[in-house]
Length: 426
Image (cartoon, rainbow, N blue to C red; front, side, top):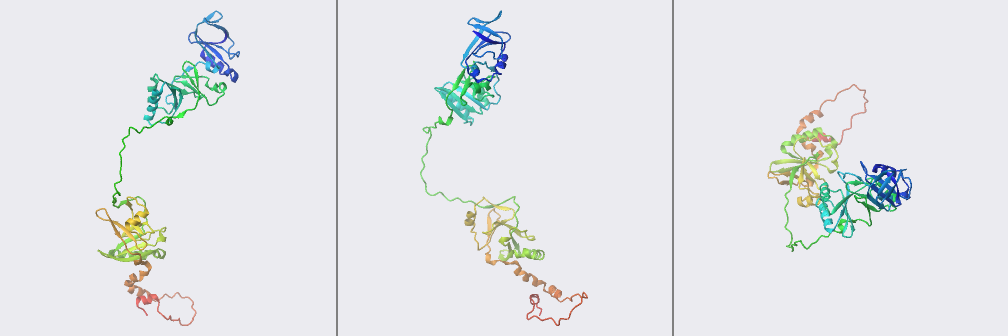
């Protein structure tokens, strides 16, 4: 039989790589491997002439002859298409494979390979049954198990060709013209297994998720029967104050009687707008008379008043008037509803929380109607400085030599001013 001659596999691959005619790639072909040194030569017979070689030779059952040179035939492959006749080339297995196909011989081998993957938490498995045998598709396989499966005679590994993922080539080999598969095969979805000896097998059917075949048996489970035992017992959780990292803004203060100068200093330094936002209550506890100063609710977004000393509190629940020490938070964290029920919060009183020596909580609940606007008690503090204020009021006014107009005697008010009444002047 007359055939084209190629001195090496590289010559054969290079010549065929120039062909882009689908009809050529789909046509049957016969390839002979010829014994030669230092590497085998090839003879190819197809219905197409040329194909990158002008040298022909006669090939028979007893060998091939090229002039006076004779070759022994070591392998003859008759393939249904030219692409299936192309010889494979050695290719090292990938160091880190993203996808591998395992051809298993029987159900026991399938269970063993799938169990290896599931043991490492890899359930990205799909399979195609081919009778008792089949193909298992494994994503991100373990390198340890790839080495183990390589020594298993019942398993064969195949890797997708980088040039054509539909072509699955046996581990250790690659197809040099895999990209021509789109010319040789009309079905864009079919997969092909390519064995190490160059034989091809089409994989018909769709792969199924592994969990379609997984059955969890309950027969081996020990079941413990349970019966209701009444209402569950109530659990006691002790609330505590713990440091927090958020920058709290003081909104309430607890002042002792000895802190009264600080309160007077506040009246001296604060603006009228700041004082209008403050409410004050005088309270008595075991240590004597003290004061509770609190901001109105609508003043939360403003700067804190310039008050130094006392115990400062920040509003945890402003509407329910729950105040915690600055820099502290309640632990464990509870919802608003639970806090209201557990601590007896309400709109008719404030709740100030402090820590006890044993780590517990102490609550102080001054009623809301005890509080008066701070400006309403200014006269209480100003009374002690009556002599200074009286002297200031009786000082002679300065004469700036301004031209004046005599408008008659000033009208005497029917009632003394507030300041004169405050200081006892008439």
